[in-house]
Image 1 (spheres, rainbow, N blue to C red):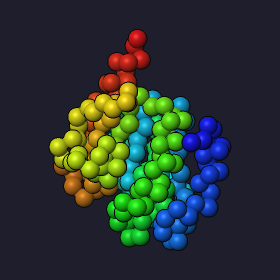
Image 2: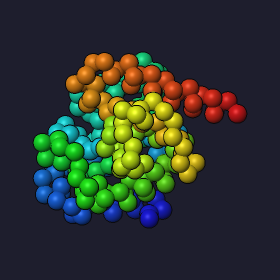
Image 3: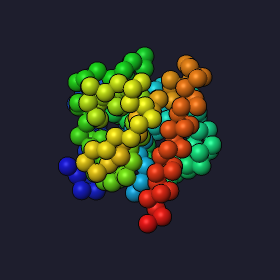
Image 4: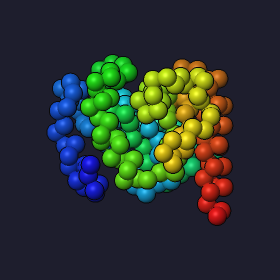
Length: 187
């Protein structure tokens, strides 16, 4: 494990731990407040993210930003990362070996950020972080505590683009996150 952000970021440059390195334009490391109380974890970069090297900058990211505005969460106050740091071809879900190859980078990001809450965006993030036994439909909107961190599984913003009915759930889940952080900062 790396002690500093600089060491961690340097370690991922030119990563070739899995086959995703062959088709990427950019490694999409993560972005935001490196001392955030709230960390968001998605599955992997899409085309816009791969091109720009930053997570959640495409259509799903714009929808997430809109939800942040509604709930009054500032993007610059949170840290955003993904299970895999390189784009899977055709935006498919990361395969198990690809997720495993990136997991040490993500664990190190969590250790350095020290978030109070991790919001798991979608099934891929949920299953890779908390275990394959979890399903997003059953776990969504319910707090799960592990090793001193509170987890809030919710829909991936891309799912909201496919199903408008999930938007209200997503926003309500973000309100729960905001309420939890507000209640903890009062002490």
